[in-house]
Image (cartoon, rainbow, N blue to C red; front, side, top):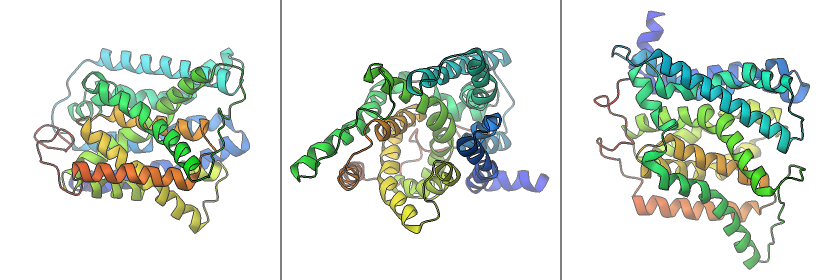
Length: 344
């Protein structure tokens, strides 16, 4: 055990990626069991697997922490309970309004006990008694320093979607608009909001971006440029989804599928990195952008793939050029990990 701890302390970035895949791929069978076979009793394992990057980041940061614990246990527990209650409400609302599943005591208890605990644990990490964990995750729940960038993150990917529709029309390649795949009589705006919150709470914020963005990006940016950082994150981020995508019915055994995934998602990662740096290291801003991007894929599912990809690449390239993302950020930048400001 001492050897493992020493390895984590000496190689925190490598340890993060290894532990992330151990958690998610180690529990990957639960995605198949729940999504394909309806074994919902394993939903707790799905939730842990989805939070793999965040849990790995918390573990590595905790092992590397050398400061005494501080802060209130009561505050952490209150934050944990609030996160569970909000998560349960979002999960129940998503089932009712989008999946047309009646709200019942069983659904609420199921969400509270099996779905939300790992999510709530990560979110409450912003109030952890471990100083390094608290500092690395505080921007998960604090929008005050990045309200403007949060709004930009909210509209950026929907804007790209509608821009691609307009461009498709210019080339005579008309995208078929679908008001949303969920079959519901409720107002579209409300459904979009609920789906956005669901994506934010159960996938991208405590599941992915607390790890990929909150842990990996600032540490990588201490070593290499934001552009190279985004490419490294993408290298691991895409195959990390393998079990989820397989359970959803995608052809993950096809080389073409993975080539398309990398081609399509590389500019997304660059945009997330740009937002993270522009918002001075806000995980929440990146989480909102990621959730909005996933929501666009659901409510605008029939976009012209080639035009959307081209549009996203153009925007990503402009961001690279404007911010000169091939250049390493100064060490005092708040989006760059510094051992003098954050112990890990």
